[in-house]
Image 1 (cartoon, rainbow, N blue to C red):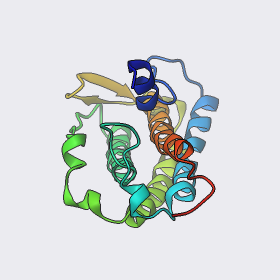
Image 2: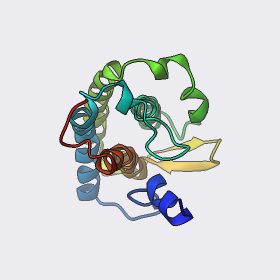
Image 3: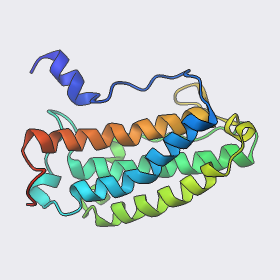
Image 4: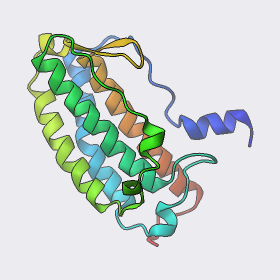
Length: 184
């Protein structure tokens, strides 16, 4: 596999671009994307069997099962960070080792609990984000692992991208394997 092909498998919708301008209209679109992700993901993989769920989305990549569990872990952290940023002045957040988490025993569980958690988590997260004012979307948190201050408006875009990024990993795998028409 050529580097270009591998890059397309790694970033099927491209890399997230930091520093983009935002408007409340753009943020509302991003919130709609965050809100619909659990439904779309469940529709895509909810009835898949272990063989498909344990297939990596690319050579050297995570399995579909790991991607689903990762989305919950990542978005749970983002939800907590959002609430910290809204209620505290530029709090410092804690990072985590995503790759190490993907090797923990709960990543071998059924995806059903994670799909339920993701649905409920996104409902709560979007409820919080949807009520923020423009001023509140300018609130920040600091991530020492990346040595970066994140603005909540950009965080909304980042996680709308993140959800779609991983959804497309799985969808493109399904397309390549002709899995979209049948359930196995």
